[in-house]
Image (cartoon, rainbow, N blue to C red; front, side):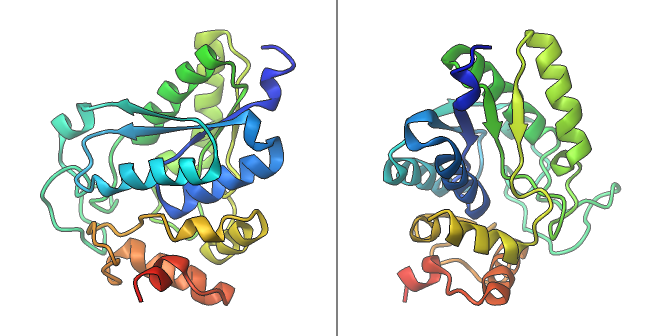
Length: 227
């Protein structure tokens, strides 16, 4: 990896609150000219998040790539790719909610690493967090560390993976979004598991987002957009 590639970051951008915060965090840290974004079309039910990701990248002034991955939809069995109601509690034998898509972050980061290798990005940035969330195992620091090691070995590519939100509560994430200039972009984001705009307000994702903004003492720009 060249010295210049160490100063270039590729952000995994879903179109949601957390990845948008990470995009602006990366811009603040590396400069807009050194940041790119990648979004994955994995057959998710709510196509609006793909549009949101494109709008956010455009507003931020960074290059954006959308890559197709349809295997998760073919596998099915979760509320994000199948016509299954989102449940608020544990819903499978592992104790994980039915919004968990097994292997999703592992695959996303592997494909993002392949793109980073080709395009000369030395760092991946992802919005995973192990606090204040649903306990997805592919959002934990030990998972990210192990994956970084595997990618670096498998590609002979000294890749860094930054997780700015890993130890933050949702309220702290909102404050970080404010500090890195991402609040205006929050109006373009999509979080609702039920795919509604304006957001439904009662699914787990909406409840957690509302809790974060309330505890941070900041009005949610997305809700204000639909007033």
